[in-house]
Image (tube, rainbow, N blue to C red; front, side, top):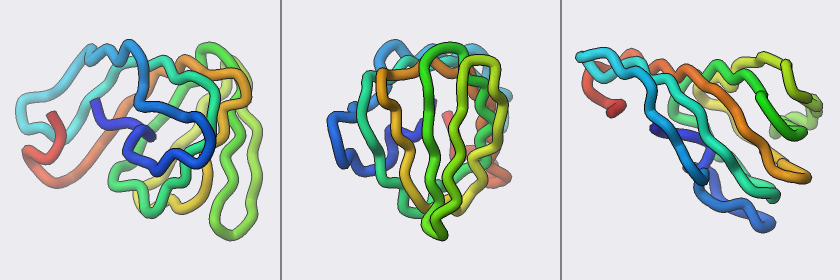
Length: 109
């Protein structure tokens, strides 16, 4: 499952632990599942997908390239839009559920 793990680690962040692909439609445009990340920060330089996230555990701080900072807690839902540039900071690690969409057939999965 594609995730923010496609970002460049700045501080400790690793690729997700225990990613679980729950659903993928046959054309490869839509995926959903959950993933667990350890603490750290990722720099995202043009995220390639639209990703709906629901934070299950931990705290997440997103800061856009324009300086807009948002803090997410368990129960928060948000969209990481295609093209997002900025940082994704996980002070203590997170667990999230996500639905990822890409209009290009066959690109996901």
